[in-house]
Image (cartoon, rainbow over all chains, first blue to last red; front, top):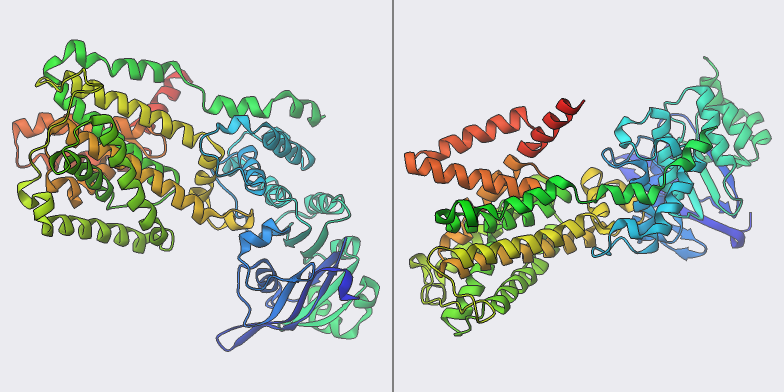
Length: 253
Length: 330
């Protein structure tokens, strides 16, 4: 993959917690429109890598590049405003806000109008309508005006995604979007991912191999903090090292 | 299809409904006029309640809406009080409205400077920093007795008639009219703020500060803005107290005042503005009644009330009343 067309790249990204090396010299490229899966056994450093790319953790070494610009030292919020947005494996929502309010807030922050303390929220009609449209796309229209904490778990997972989409990302980092969701519902969540506009590049963590093979154009396998292999699904599936570290142990059940 | 129900609600109308004036609110503000007709001997007390309510609103904006717990907000109340007092006593400027605005601006300016520190600490450290700043300001005012009058208080304040027409009278007609008008304007401003997109961002910070950067929010700047606004409103409240009592005591900067205002807010209910007003009303009425009965031990009852409210009405008296009203309706 020529790095010239990569929207997001990491170069030699490393992170250690004490003596534990959780990310080891990771260099990956995410081209425009990518649907890349990030897989690996528990403790492989998948979420840590997402945290490093999103800016929630600072790397000990290496760089993160967004459209060729070095954003390694940039704060999370600034990265989001440049189009690099993540979701969380564990719901990180606003329990007392309604989905309509939460997504409208994300839209207002994107548009830079969340500082306008002198205008009634209802006058930001475009932001509200956009928020409502996003919720409609994710089948949350019916519960848009109920407090988030009253939503079913699967709906909260969708709201995770809705908040990220409201930032109009160019690169979307999805940390197990279907975590804890029953298998039939997780297909629904990934149909949302599949329906995303093609210009959005997606990097997602997922444990269910059926979903990974159905949705990923390429697969990055992490093991012990480093990239074991990165290739198209058919190659990854037949790689003996991958079977050893990952598929072998996951296929028990 | 779910699509039909989706289009059934108008989202902007729903948002607007959240901030619509209710009949109860209108009735509440009309009731605030009652002391003029029914309790003319209590107008000075009513005026003090209005001052405390405005102060409590300033704290509600940061504590109730943005989740910044403070035990040092008397700092800004006192800065406003001394600014208004010194303007008259030392500079000879007794025009009340400009004096009040200067008091608010001064407190807001100090609040802005302090806000850089406030947004960098959280939880216990935040409470300790606010407490420390409050104590610091108190002792500074105490040490600068050449300016502030120290423990004797600041004297020689002469406030001119409002608009050159309404002289501050002994009964407190002017005082209560003035404080009630400022309270109402302050309340309108606060109401506008909490119902704006900025107010929504504050609630987002309170609900889950970890998510804010992930939706691209420069939330620290939001916190600085609301802290500055809150400090300015607290300064207005302090300035009002000076102008209606013609004196400033060190007590206006005391820890006791910082703690009392939080107690008022918890009693009334946080994050709903009216809780601040109701809490101030209950607190000062109880103090007025009980200190007449037993001037030394009245905090015993405040303590008891605080515990009962916190244990049985976690959303304050106003929250409890709302729940009760909902139950009788349902």
